[in-house]
Length: 171
Image (cartoon, rainbow, N blue to C red; front, side, top):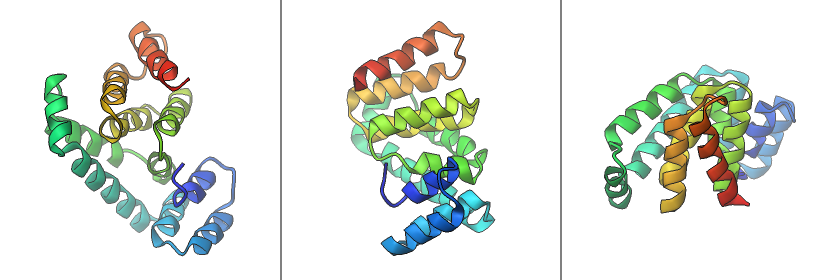
């Protein structure tokens, strides 16, 4: 997990109390860390800032030339994915946003996506899958996009297959 967003994730998952999360953030002297914990607590300004940061980061990543070309090759349109991501992010609360910011590696993204699926948070699961697409290498991009496309019915064979591919990639 990304060390600066770990306190917010701990609060979001109920591992730590908000006061502990804030204290951990103050030790690292990072305003983004504090804002993410405040977002988990439901602070509307912090939630808004976290949403904007996530959307801007996703837009920047997906607009890179190599990603754009790759997306077109797999029949995805960057603008429609950006709009879909925006819609998903605006439907998430502070706890879910903290979970979306925390992953620093693909395995963490995958695990938190599974956590969202198990907890019936389809919007968060889809957002994790979309967020994973531009961050990692070509194979993982394809696997995350396939999971996004098939998400999130556990009874669906195609979704279970997409999840299994991600799992086997990581083991």
